[in-house]
Image 1: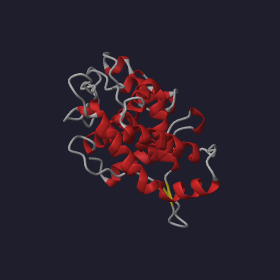
Image 2: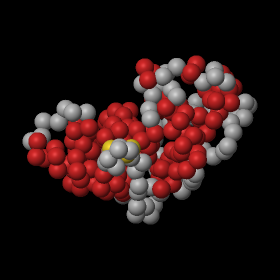
Image 3: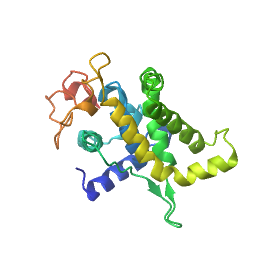
Length: 230
């Protein structure tokens, strides 16, 4: 598990990325990880890593920076995956906080979760149409919170105010409900047991990526010919 110092390093690294590359900050990335983990379909790192740091990897000054970024990003993803490995009964999102007022800012986390949902819309639609009312309602509620976070909700103002206040406590329950659905299944409708979220071990471990080792993004190529080529 990432230590507090490691989380600060990851936070600083993400903050250092150019804003115009559409990369993520820490809270958004944490929500993104949760969305990836509870998604019914496995999404390989090679597809989602560029969502985290943006399309342009030239912002990294040296190969060591790429290795550090990849390691911290994958280790945090693993931490979220392990926290939701059955029997998962608790989940704690990483929210931002207003340093002046102490207010919990959940909106960035929710935006990250929705970015993960956009990668596999058909998989999330499967939950909505599954017949599981609680799981379907959780998908719809997460989208409703995203609309509030983005200032595009058409709900009554009173409902928006209530959900805004309840969101920090509501979100962990939504994640656990969706996680339980993803990891449930029957012989006639099995859950996707190839998904990283359904494994009892993390999909990637290590403090340093070797030049000749397989790239952790899942491309099948050597690291030096893939994410390490920059």
